[in-house]
Structure formats: structure tokens, C-alpha cells
Image 1 (cartoon, rainbow, N blue to C red):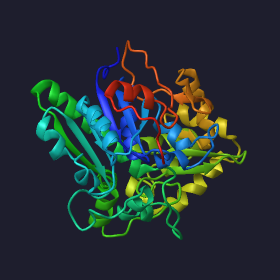
Image 2 (cartoon, rainbow, N blue to C red):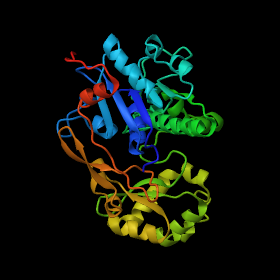
Image 3 (cartoon, rainbow, N blue to C red):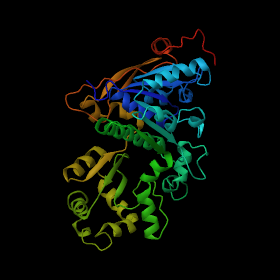
Image 4 (cartoon, one colour):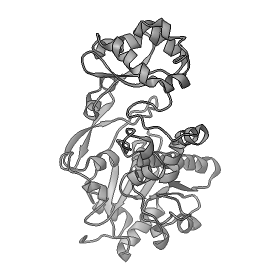
Length: 385
């Protein structure tokens, strides 16, 4: 039996952050009931049509859930929602700022009669402060926390390649809900959990903020290279492919010089002896590495680096994840049904020994209308947009 079997989660969710959190709960065996707007649903359903006609975002974020269409301002539908909430262990919401309180779906209202309830609210900027009512999307929060200005080239800042603000927020919401469920199991009371996107991504940005504030200089944008560790970035091999090399300390630098570069004289060179000096002189290190790689193809360069105990990686395209030899060798892919067909889905990152992880299907909009209305009351003949 999966760890969260018997736990019911109702989620008034959309986009990425909240669905990412609740999908983790579904993967652990929780029953997740996703409340969607009649006729339209979670707007992430329409981000693209790349996965058998469905959105890549929605397929990624919503497996294993039940979908019901409810107009929560309609009295009959509200009765259904209230019945579902009354049977839930966890309520998750990322409605527009202030909407949950206006609808009586906030933590204070729901937990007043059910103190054992775990209630999780996800917002952009938190419930107080001058930004509390401001719209927050992933890229905007990347901007506000300094991530965009820390990413890219010296000439132009850049966003991260994935929705890092949403993903960070979803993971903190997930861990917060698990913590609250543990508290309930040990102490008998539920909890009110709040997660703001600016806090979640802000936590990830503290190190570069420290480095800039206490180092007395603005964060450098260094393309694919690390801004404060060297050598740590991509270097071209003789076949034109690039190999990432990551040297974390002086011992590894010495091994790189001796066993890969064939330049033991560089170990004690004052320009490269310690990481701060290597960062300052990074423009000199790149040609040294690429000169050693010039007669090697990328596979041979990786082989030498591995043998020397130097961290390295191949620069792969996103599509190559689906056929990555390490994931294939470890049997990390499973088939999951979507409304338009079957996709390969990666097993959850956390593996619990002795438990087979079973991932549910991705629901079509309102797929569980009839069964959920039968279970919780409020049969409705027609749902209109």
C-alpha cells in the first residue's frame, strides 16, 4: 500500500505550482480531486497541444487525479464542493489573491469547524505586503528575485529554461503538506500551510545574493559557466561536441592538471592555485582545457575525466532525456494514458523500498463528473461554460 493511501486531497488549482504539489501527493497514493471550471478547466490545458493534442504542461502535472467541473458560485455545485471538502484531509488552493476568503474557502473558515484539516494556500507574493494583490507568473517571479539578472550572457540576461519558480513553490507546498500530515498523525491537529512563490525562489537565490552583497560586486552572467567556481562549464572536444567539466576543489584541480591536461606545472601556478584565483583567470583556463581536448572526441574526453575522478557531463538536448542511458538502464519510465494517447512518464524521484509505484492516468476535463456527483450528491443534468 502506498504511503498516502486513504488520504483525500481536494484542489482548486490551475497552472503549475499547485498541480505540481498535488501530483506528488497522487504519486504517493493520495486521492486527488481536481476542481475545474466548467467548460474550460485548468487553463494549463490550453498552453499547447503537443502531447497527442493535449498540453505538455497538463500531462506532466496532472496524472493520477480525478477531474470534476464545478461552478463554485452556483448553489448546487457549491453544495457538491462543500461535501467534497467535508470529506477531505487536505485542501489546496491557488486562486487569485483574496478569492478564497471571499468564497469561504480560506483556512480560517474551513478549519474553524474542522481543526484537523490541512489547508495549503499558494500565492505569488504572500498574504501581506504591497505585492499581495499583484499577479505572479513564473517568469515575473524569476525577475523579482534576481534570477533573470543572474542568468544569461554578459550582454543579455535570460530566464531559466524551465518553470523554476513554480517548481520550487510546488515542492515546498508538497513538503509542507507532508509535514502537516505528520503533525496531524502525531499531535492530532491539522495545519494552515502558506507558500509564496517569491519565498520559494527567493530561498534558491540567497547564495548569489550573499555573494553580491558581501563580495561587493554585482553577480556576473557567465553563460553556461559557473559564476563563482572554475573550471566549471562547457569545453569543446575535437569532434565539435562539448563536455561539461566541474572542478570543486584544489585536489580535483591537481588531478585534472596531472591526468587529463598533462600540465602538472599548472598545479602550483599562483594564477590557478585556489578557486578564487581560478575564477579571476577563468579566461586562461578554457584554452588550456580545449587544447588538451583537441585531439579527443567527446566520449574519450569523458572517459579520461571519469578515470581521473573529475565530475563531467555530456551536453544533452531535452528530448534526449527520454532515452538517457542511465534512466533506461534503471527502468525509470512507465506508460501513462492521457486523453489523446499513451506517453512515457518518469517514475517519481523518491523510491521507497518494497513499494511498487503506480502512476494514474491523466484525466480529461470533467471525466469524473458523474461518479463524484453520485458520491457527494448534487447530480446535474447539464454543465455550461
